[in-house]
Amino acid sequence: MTSPTQAELDALPVEKRQELYDAYRQRPWQNFTSVGVLFGLLFTAGGLYYTARTWETGQETLKATQQQQITDRYTKAVEQLGSDKSVEVHIGGIYALERIAADSSADAETIENVVVAFILEHDGRTSSMSISHRSLLSPERPKKRPLWRPGADVLAALRVLGTIAKSRHSQPDLSSAIFAYADWSGANLTGAYLSHVDLGGADLNGAKLAGSNLSHTWLDAANLASTDLSKANLANASMVEAKLSSANLQDANLSEANLLKANMLHANVIDTNIAGAFLPNGDVSKGDISGIYNEVEPTEQGMPPQSGITH
Image (tube, rainbow, N blue to C red):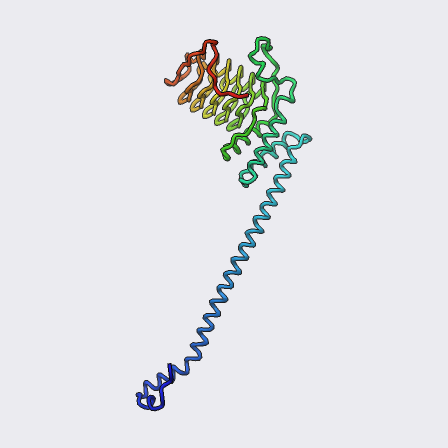
């Protein structure tokens, strides 16, 4: 835009000439202000970028610090599981591992494997009084064997394993664990993971096993009288000659379980799932079965059909 000529200015009223004059004087300041605003925007953008980079760096540092803390906690917890440590120290290490698994899902599988290894190292194979389920029902088996009591650290490990397995929806391998003839009377095994474990002949009288996983578990000749098994998973479990008198089996899953000659006198089986369960000789004459009892016909050899139990 070109400036007006002198003749054009002379033709304008005084007020218009004053406005043009004032605008002319203010133009440099307007330009300066625009440049200042531009620099201000650039400075703000730079500040935001710096802040973002600082935040990212801080987050990376925080993650590295947290991971180092988890590593240190894990190392210390595993050291507590050493064979030269006391039961109390073992329990502290087991619960420390449980907290780490909750804090770091990436380490949960590793911790699960460590807990499994601890259980297998402290099962009945180290006890001369333990015996595998394979001889429980043999004709020459002894009528009664002395019981042995696993440590409180093993109980804690089984409960923690149940918590971790449930959170991960995993199935840890305890198929080689032997706790036959274990004395767990009155023990707290709430929510414990005992799937595929050998518990033949074990004494679980009055034990707390609510919500525990006992699927495919061997409980032949086990004493489960007055045991709390509410909401427990006993699918495909073998409970031949098991004592379940006065046991609480409410909401439990006994589908496909083998209950041959099991004693269920006064057992609470309200809302219990026994679909496909083998129970031709179970004593439920006074148990509350709420219309769910379905007897399965035995085979020609008098044994139940294949239940899928592997051991």
